[in-house]
Length: 222
Image (tube, rainbow, N blue to C red; front, side):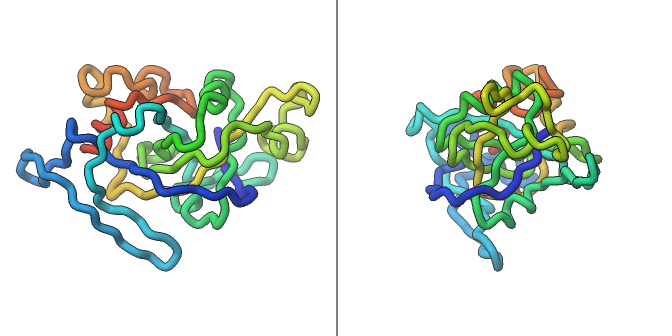
């Protein structure tokens, strides 16, 4: 699974992250809908958007949405900790390279990403797996050289070479942390209806998967 690491600085631009009018935020305890209002909380290192204004996804029809998994808890491989959480991403001062992907389906999804696409940050291989935040693709796919070619790296692949690279990465930037974890158990409740087209619920082991726009909007409305 991916273990992002700091990379060269890339200028990123703030991007709307929010659901369209199709799925408005529900008032807690009432089941009724309300229109979200822009509000920001400023921390010592970054600004975290906790409630966002509604944005119509149709305004940017070329954007794609993704879900990318990383492990938030310590796991040692070849003497290195492959842990990487949403808070680790937020602490990065530069865009992070989403490296270590060693599944062809996930790799192909990385290669399909475009700058400006958005992705859910998903905590996996932990007690409560689920969506915890949002990040933006700020650099499109390049060769995963650091982790694929170095025998000391946890995700070294002797079959991948500089002349014939097999693995790629994208660079991402933190955009916001969700107010609460949207867990896998909760997502499965909607598997037969609103999230019936969500690849996460069909190919659970895939570390990088697409998110249809309607599923993206629905998840943000929960």
